[in-house]
Length: 91
Picture 1 (cartoon, one colour):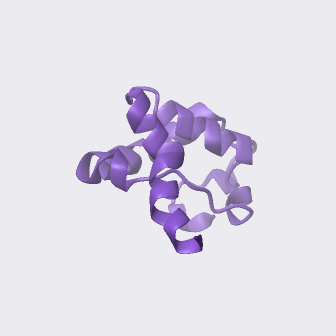
Picture 2 (picture 1 turned 90 degrees about the vertical axis):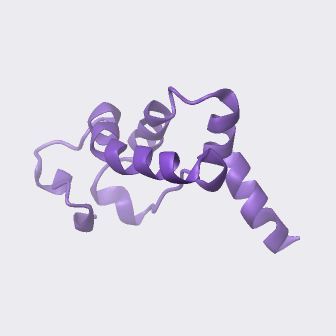
């Protein structure tokens, strides 16, 4: 996705999860700090984002970004917030 401004599509090789996490870190950390893990969730825009990185690289980058979070915060970011928000909509 070129709109992100990272220009990964112009590099000879796609980014690894470490490079991708470093690029996302300012935005992700700002959002989590502003809203808290209970109001944030990791998600993907695949297959649209496939032009920037692989699915595995994206999710491994998310894991890197959440490495310093507590267990409860990681649960919220990877599943808890989504379950709390979306599950009532389908029940």
